[in-house]
Image (spheres, rainbow, N blue to C red):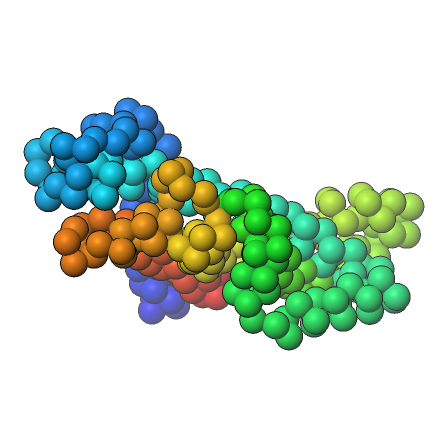
Length: 273
């Protein structure tokens, strides 16, 4: 018992520390307009590819734009799109999973076979194909990733609904004349919320990689809008001359993904204690 308590305390400390770091990143990008020292879209012929210094902490890119300001604004784009996509996938997948698990039958068979088809193809391959067809910037990239993202939420919600619906209190609610909607929303949804939210946390890093990857390939954010993936793509053409234009957005992407992945893993470990 003591060992378990010590482990719980360590995991709680990990979650708190990582959550604070994640919150700082979110706040820094949210208030980019206040923190950015320069206009991220202002070009300057006299400041092209300047090395990091007092005026430009992360240097400038090939058009003389402040890389530090663009990293802050790019983080706002990347993180906001990631959170929105994960939330929409969580909502759609959880609803589908609960309906399949509760009603079963032909609805469950059709939707789960569709989920199996989605899982048969690598997510990024599907996303690249769909984003290329849509050609709709970040919205198209989000739709392209969302086509397969809902599956993990649906399967998780379905499995928990299957086990929950056979509990005695669910049967009691049914015999008391409660509607299916009432039973699902009041009894089933709250009991599967924790594992599904934990899954959502673990999906943040993967989704961020996907969105940045599509932008890097020119299938996400349309330049000159700041976004980490597109910044790396733009800067790689002159990486030997101005490596900071690639390194700083790359570091921002890597650090952010590591923090959110670590937070998701810590929460998952805590849930299993």
